[in-house]
Image (cartoon, rainbow, N blue to C red; front, top):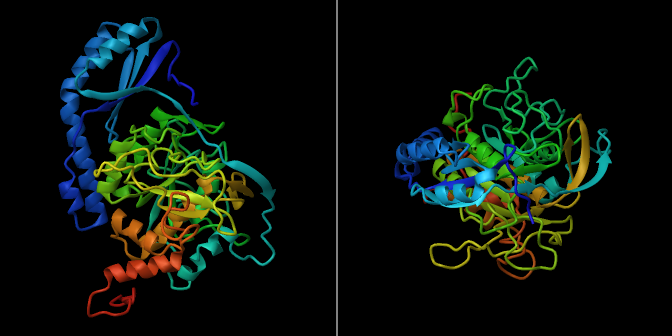
Length: 465
């Protein structure tokens, strides 16, 4: 059971959902990625501002009465973090529950990363510098042979941070400058320790980023070796975060800021956000408003399914993997067998038809995956945390070929191209099967092929270069 977390001494910290209903129609109809991102953010800002007009005076009045210590509206998340005095907790709880602009109110809870560490791997390569097994298993090299390597696509990683100087990541971190120096504005955010330079004091985030896009002369670890990565640090050196820190990271991904936390710019938002974390309570909806905004912005949210699957108990998919907007990723091993820890569907969230949402969506290698670690080393790790970035990297390959693919189209291509595993047909252990990059590209080609164009158009056709 997750622990309760307070953000200041002698307080109780609550996370409350705002009653907001953003209109995303213009964003969903936008013709290109930048426009879709800007319009989605504008819609969220407008909806939140309308609610804040009456909410802020009410919370300020409770603050003056000593029932609220302080509060923070977390932009673009539809949430407010409220600290109340521990000494007057009962009265404070009654007071904030009476605020009509607030929906569901929950205590701030810890979210802990639980990937299994394997052996440290030498930096000297695997002898033949062949792709690591997980990269080969999903057929990523087959996409590279077609010239599709993730160029032009940015993947955001919400995790423990990133070591931008790692040889496998230095060329892929968006903040790396031409002279080898770093500019972390719009590429790194740290709501934990408020540091302005990218770092990773745990390792999980650097490992995840490496699986998305890492590559070096000595090891081939990333699915999309020409993609860029940015990072928000929502988890500390112990691998612990909480609802509040995660919400701040989600907010930043929709509109990254400069190193001083100012001048948010939605056009610098990533195309894909990898979330190798989750609340074990799959019914938790505290992140849902942001995931709806991701969807409206054309940002693909990839989420690890969770590591609560031992015993094959159903409905162990965590949140936000349980949301329909997420691409939830289960974990398999090098033999295409589901990892026993990989969480099982369906979701505990019901869809518009009243049925539990089908989850997981897809599977990817997540057992003994070798990737980068801070300081230039490599390590094997296991968990759906390692499967998620594999799918995020393949999504980057798809969007590299077709930059304006919608999240729905990315999902459809991944699922259509998946290799069926387990019982015939989709199931709640493997989803639609293990991802295959080449088959997913073929599915994407079919989507964008015109009736009089039987083969995929040459991506360089019409180019002046």
